[in-house]
Amino acid sequence: MVQNLEAEIMKKNKQIRSKYEQALESGELSLHYQPIVDAETHITIGAEALLRWLDDDQKAVFYPDQFIPLVEEDLSLMLETTKFVVQRACADIADLQERVPNLAQDFRVNVNISPSDIVQQGFVKHIQKQLSESAISPENLGLEITERQSLVALGLETIKAKIIRCREQGIHISMDDVGTGHSTVNSYTDSGMYDTAKLDKLFPDKTISSKLGTVYTEAVVKKLHEACASILVEGIETQEQAETFRDLGVDKLQGYYFAKPMPFNELVNRVATEQSNVIPVSSAPCATRNASNQQALALTS
Ligand code: C2E
Ligand code: MG
Ligand code: MG
Image 1 (cartoon, rainbow, N blue to C red):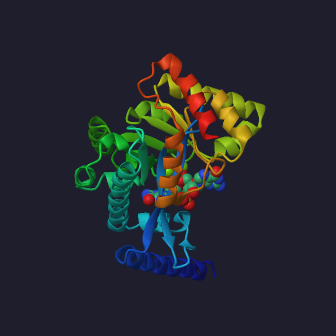
Image 2: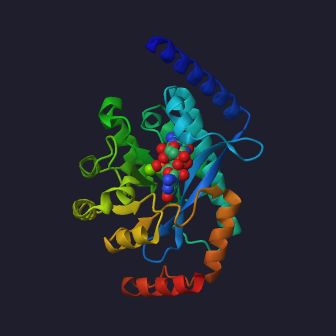
Image 3: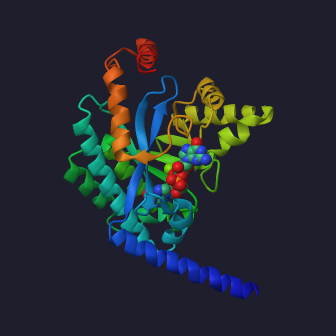
């Protein structure tokens, strides 16, 4: 009985993977972008590219949580997926820069990378190629890595060397889903290969709802800031959560409270509207930056 069920699931997964392979080849996959905002000003400072498998009516055929784990079982299919995502995202960044001429120079788009991609030959070269073909600066691209699988099992030294090569060029590296799987605060601080710690949705969802959880979150934020991490919290759904994490000293926020993932054109419109109301602050001294940003926020709201 159990064996039958397992065989049935395996057969279904194989069918989904083969359908996915066709979708990738025939260009049925696309990217949506979810804004990332400054925790103080709520101004969009970047976005995360999220893969979408949509039908003709723009409805999801499957969600990434359903198909990415299956794709990850086939290393070359995963790498093909990542190559597509990086290529599309780099082209979109170039397009965004052209369509929003006063876009902040450090506006960054993050793509999600499976750890198994990094160990494969040609990974760093592919990223470099995409950056140069789209003529964008490495600072405008970020990689989000979830340590779902242990990096030690995949070859930590190789991964670290490749990630450091990316970082040296200016590509920003985030540890995704901190607080889940092997994405722990200790592995963040020990590895020395990340710029940003992206705290998982479980922090706003569960951890900060108790007094003990809030004390724990404060300790996590303190330890990560001591390690010079920039901290982003994902899954922010309410104003209260946004204020709590801002007050805890978190740098960046992302979640449905600000915006859901959206097609590229909607991101362009959102950023263009914000930029047309923003006073440039990049050259302002640190002490006045927050005040200027607050003014910018007042103008946009
Ligand atoms: P992730 O990278 O941690 O992305 C965050 C997920 O949470 C996204 O789901 C996003 O739509 C969702 N989310 C964001 N804000 C909120 C919120 O306030 N509330 C709730 N309930 N959800 C929120 P999505 O797009 O379904 O992606 C799920 C996961 O699939 C991603 O988690 C990532 O691990 C993976 N994934 C998506 N696109 C890619 C890709 O291009 N490559 C790889 N390797 N993985 C991807
Ligand atoms: Mg992510
Ligand atoms: Mg995440």
